[in-house]
Image (cartoon, rainbow, N blue to C red; front, side, top):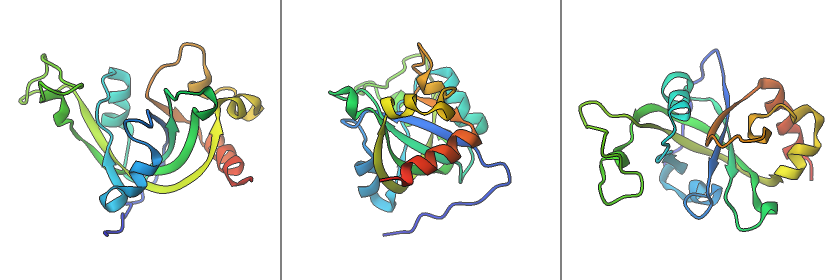
Length: 168
């Protein structure tokens, strides 16, 4: 199995990326060849723009399980890194797939994705635990009406979450 190598850059960014575990879980990422997967299926322009314009190899990622059967299962389930810069998401051209976009053309694609590399599985830090921490109250994922699948995380929030994820 190849080892994932991250290229460092001077302005590290941090992201929270939501995935439905039935579609792709932190365990799926850990079991993937090279422990890396493309983050396909994003169909929101703001989330696409984060990937296209701001994500860089080496950025930190909070892997967040969403749309779970029980609310207690929703939350941060692991850590990952951006492992590849944005490139065309081929799923937009698959007419039989769930992410097909009839208005997108190969010569001018609308949608991109990045590759995400596994770092480690963590204990689940659910929404209730996130909401209970005063240092995390400004996290976009906790704001009313926030439905973006990709949101930026501040360096302070990232540092606090690293502390919480180390606790047993």
